[in-house]
Image (cartoon, rainbow, N blue to C red; front, side):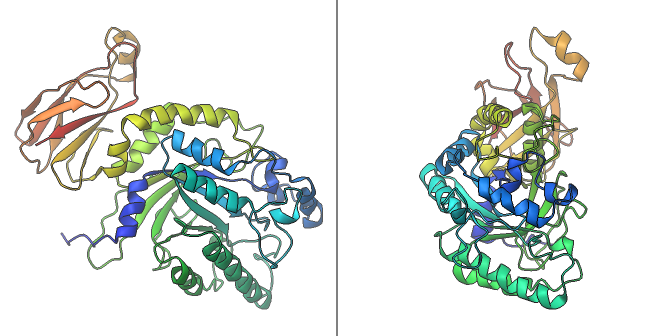
Length: 417
């Protein structure tokens, strides 16, 4: 097997962020029918653009948003600075007047967002569309498209120069005109000149999960699909994996979309991402004027209670080649002296009649691979010591059930040399 490629420090830091909040909010939020409402409801731009006249952003608070992310156990936030409708939440500084400062909001909302993130200790990232319906980038002439690229690069340069150090930029839309010259190298080189350690993402789309994309892109994306363990060797540039996912079936708020994820589903998806070393970027769609939506707030704060128990494991644990069975898996710290057994489907003591039917079992579970001589094991949630024993292929861990009154969905034990 080839050696793994070296990991630049800024990519290693991004991997350690582990869990982030995606936020889709813009003019479309006032209609409450999802972020693609202009396209799929066939609203002409001359009818859509007046939504700007009622955009007050009165419920938006950058620090409250950042504090919410931190409360949920998230370490970074990606906010839509401009989505496909072309409206910008930031001051475009003369590029056009289709932005928040020229709306009744009268404010640079991205400046407020960045200040809030810094105050709360979470990392700000900027989503920026490349597809732009206000320019008709899907169908315009090649000459008009080239002018648009100049406008796009100028727009992104504002984001790179006016808000201090940022975590990165998250692009989306190149898939809309696949044969076009998007001048990616020009865009990414400009970003690096101003923000040398910014993470660069360009979404491969829901139909191209894990596609590598341009060589200067740092992340392979998995839109609405669980990531896979990628084998990377020393001849390749290292890429981080990231799954982005919605809480229901829309990115922008959908008032009549009730197909929400539960806290248990979110926990399971977060664990599945960390199993392969990928980040989990989970979306909410704020209300018309920027308020946090009620269900998502309650659900994700509940997940935050779980994430708080295991924050170190989520941030520092990495795949280590040790195999377990079923949905279980093993992570390791960078120094190789601590391992983490991540267990699923455990029963509740004195409540086994309810959990047995879901396939929950307790008892010894095998681990296979090159394990060091482990000496101790304990559940991290209750500090209960667990038994370890050797077998022909490695070791086994006695995974006991939950004490009555609890069920963590996914439970983690620390194993130490």
